[in-house]
Length: 310
Image (cartoon, rainbow, N blue to C red; front, top):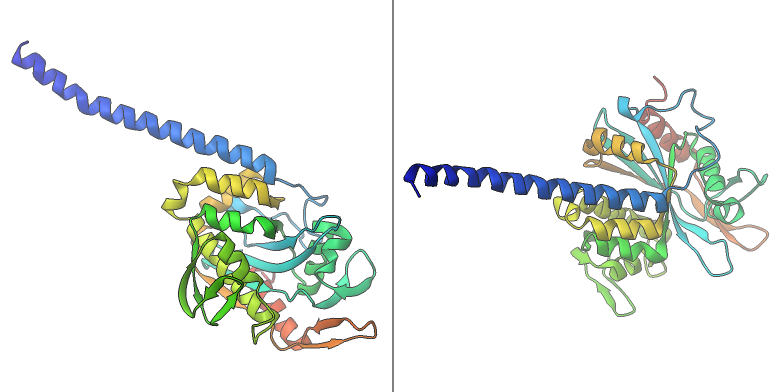
């Protein structure tokens, strides 16, 4: 073989390598898309209404309108409709690149929209599922809820394991069963994380301490889910989501959020309800009563973040 022919052959190899790498990339992205599409069919759960009654116009995610999400952590028991023991509202504003997150105490005494009486807010799910929970939270916070995400808490550990665990900063030294949770930064697998967020009775903060741990883990899952490491582990994540999550968000809306709102997830401002009071009513059941001034303050903060006054 002539030396000139050998040089030509050598020059072809880099382009062949680039072509193979490009082909592998296309196959990988196609695999991700197909897996995501399959998982979406499982998690997509449309609700009856198309737009909140509190909005004049439908939000435009491609135009970066701020929006809100209700997250319900549901414990479903056999033969029972279940309870939404975790109730978290997030408002996402891409314009100031921030997210606000607030937990609503599950024992909050409020009007159950659609039933015509007051009860614990977590009972709304048992009475009327996602839609009644959504309407009741809207009424309490006086803001439109645009999307809802329901998470089966029994499968929550699968989601944590799918992102290879989460790291949180624990402020209370405690133990639950065989699990020990020292103060400081700790890394939790799925089973440990579920036990961590469920502990309530040994916490001096009661349900408020529990809410804080829930928000810690959710924030950590969001952070891990957006990492490159998780992208490479997409199959496990999609499988976990498909089996344990329901949402009314469409595929196109998810794409718009990923493209236009990713910067807002990096800064999460935690809001708290902590000035209310608890007590029993004539039925002997303990309820949490919101402090009206504090509730009005939180309503105003969330409205401003959603740019509802503009």
